[in-house]
Image 1 (cartoon, one colour):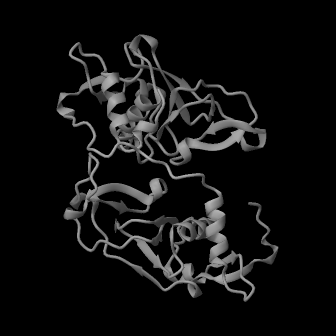
Image 2 (cartoon, one colour):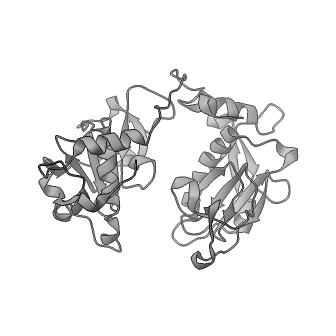
Image 3 (cartoon, rainbow, N blue to C red):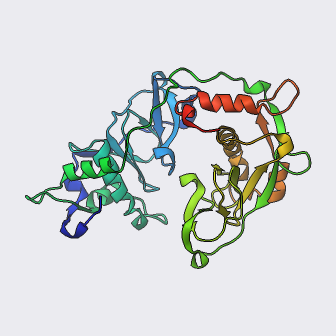
Length: 338
């Protein structure tokens, strides 16, 4: 559906909502993140940019003052904005917005527009409640000049085919990290060959379809699509050592990586990478990011000497098959290819 905004009308956001407020935050150290699937889980919403602002899932039994779903959440110090369809709890500096017109479709539409305004509230300027209410949004209108919520519903519906489904409804495979083994990431005897990215300025980037992987923490690391030929193969892992240090993403197709990002190629003698194994290893790598914060870069030399803990076979090798099986036992894991 093509959009013609010439007939749209500007509205003050505060005039459209029923309530806006801050909730009592939870200290993440007081909550026990889930390591398994549970229908009794609630999202722990923070100011993170990725994963719909959900940092962890926790058991509802471990939380109090759970907020109802169908709300918009905004991190006031980060201007991170998300629609929350399910009940949730929050961390610090989270603003909650509720309105009669709000549902999954209108929530996605409005949060998209709000995100376009976030550039006004960066570099230390907080997106406080009065500023949120004063935000001007350009919206489609009905013949009487009110917001056309039905048009927004129809537009969002036109973007989707059918919802994703999963057959995995039981608890994933159990595991005991104490039985895992340490493996060297790169260098002599390591699991991966680690290759650097290459600098390419925005002015030099041509238009095209090749993923350009930057040192960012969202969108699978894809900062742009360019017309240059890829410099790295697909079925590898991108790992940033500068910028958003420690962000690891499985890359299924050939790509260009900036010079702040290294590419990890699993050595043939160590095994064969698959999407499921790649996702497993990326999760493990992200747990190492805390070692390289506050200006300490994860240099190529440090990266090659890094050791990560993985499931192991009785022979002491990485148990790639177990990792494959574990990821595919998760909700929606059954939709991954080999």
